[in-house]
Length: 256
Ligand SMILES: Nc1ncnc2c1ncn2[C@@H]1O[C@H](COP(=O)(O)OP(=O)(O)OP(=O)(O)O)[C@@H](O)[C@H]1O
Ligand SMILES: [Mg+2]
Image 1 (spheres, protein in one colour):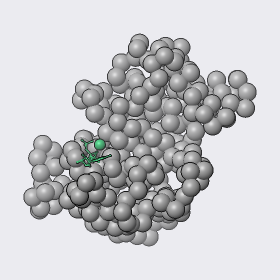
Image 2 (cartoon, helix red, strand yellow):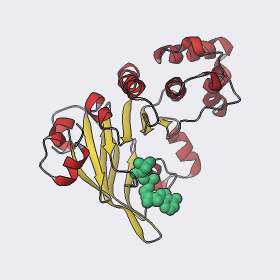
Image 3 (cartoon, rainbow, N blue to C red):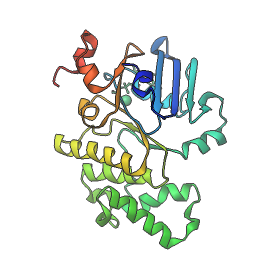
């Protein structure tokens, strides 16, 4: 089922549109006419094998890389046409949880949480309001009690939660997740997946998640896109794709 069919009749706006994106490195065509839509309020999971170009795609989306050709637009803005100032402004509406999701090891959880606010000189609202904001987002990931800890004192799952809370502090409209469950044990991974779903509902964000973890698609996605051969190879709900009779798609569902 195509995204237009899933969204037909719903009053949802397209907030990301990628049309025929091409990106090559040293003659190797990584994205070969890739298309993608993300609708407001949607949780979209992009599944692809290692090296299929998922990270490259997300880097093109946020303007860290530019394709040779193709349309990339977010919140109505054409990314390749933005200057640095305009990109920075747009990025204020986007949260990132990138592979590794590094916290600053030399800073406490509180200082890590303050960091995005300081960077944008948004500490103006006063100490108490900032403290309240930090406690609220930490509370929404279930870790208010960790506020004074150092990253070294946190487990991998806790670090991931804190990193998610840190993206929430700027109230993003869209959150990009690059492999949010990699390196976590299955139980912790599942907790993080559910948390991503809860956060999306609570903060009314849209989520674009790139992963090889099909559990994310199964548990919280509204729609799944398979990135293969540099293209949007197939898209639909998890159930649609699971039922598909195509060897490339089936390969992803072998253990599901
Ligand atoms: N800056 C770069 N310079 C040259 N080649 C690159 C660069 N970035 C990515 N590539 C190549 O593009 C291809 C896709 O890489 P990408 O990181 O997007 O894969 P991925 O789908 O995110 O994989 P993984 O699941 O392992 O994270 C790879 O062959 C990689 O070597
Ligand atoms: Mg990657």
